Length: 166
Image 1 (cartoon, rainbow, N blue to C red):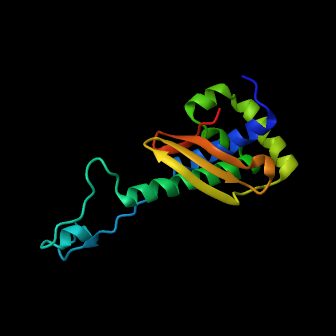
Image 2 (cartoon, rainbow, N blue to C red):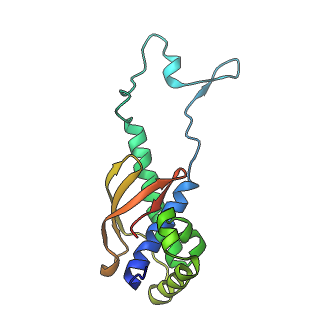
Image 3 (cartoon, rainbow, N blue to C red):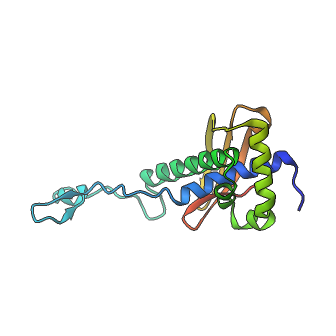
């Protein structure tokens, strides 16, 4: 499939962000140690009060915020990698479907050209429009009109967000 240069740059930006998210998992355990050295969660320490848990069909607000933060970071990472140019990282942030449509060598040439024409870039504005399970839509830009993207598709694969606008 042939891509226009702008579409490839946008694709590259999205890809870099996705790869970065895959490696951004952290240990946000807020447990406290008990006197015997074992970990006790804050909810478990309040034995008299039941922990508020969301219904099985409703994600926890913390999960939603974590998904949104991870997605935003993936978009940022993709964009930085594309314009660095760090084509390997950016290409790794593409969904499997898009990576199959865009060979790494073609993507590397695009990243090099993007860097030569625009230099290093970072996200200036970003908005997660929607997250629905493993699919998301994100609007973002780097302050250059042709790279302002609205409702760009992203997908979660292998635990990380990937650019999926091919």
